[in-house]
Length: 229
Ligand code: CA
Image 1 (tube, rainbow, N blue to C red):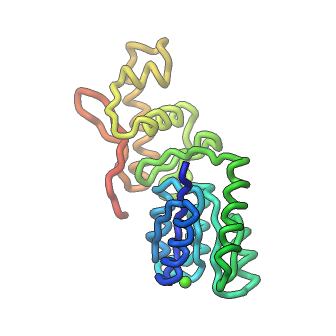
Image 2 (cartoon, rainbow, N blue to C red):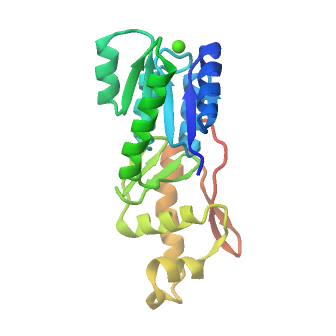
């Protein structure tokens, strides 16, 4: 399977050169020239690796890395123009896999990419579910909205997970009840309404987003709506 790399680098000629070399090696490459756009792409896409410049417009690379790490463990190799020890230490502390100092030989970068990908293959990353601003990590049992952690009860977590796994699919009360609560509860579908209300309070209302929608007479659906708060 082709591996994909996100390259976040504002020097367009360097980005183009690295892109061509990576494509030549068989990688799929997506480029972003701005920290903020790079972070969005990193959060939304499913990349095997990210090459991240530190000095970036929009949002600097270390901040991109910190925000990314709240939600994803995609391996990151930092590209730093400065030979500053501080950046490297901060970068590795913030969760970078490796760093390389510019100017670098492309062979060295390729070798470091192969190493990072091999290391990652040995320890598969957890699949974090995402619907718009909401992220749910089933293994670590953590839910965040716009990066801020939300505390849920066990049942709320199960309900949210099931709805996120079925993003954009309208789920009836009966389906939710039998899946999340089990058949013993069948008949008492208003318990679903109560828990949807709890989730709405904790997620949508507290964080000013809209993800849990009521479809009158049918049930509920979890879907993202672009909301810039
Ligand atoms: Ca730069």
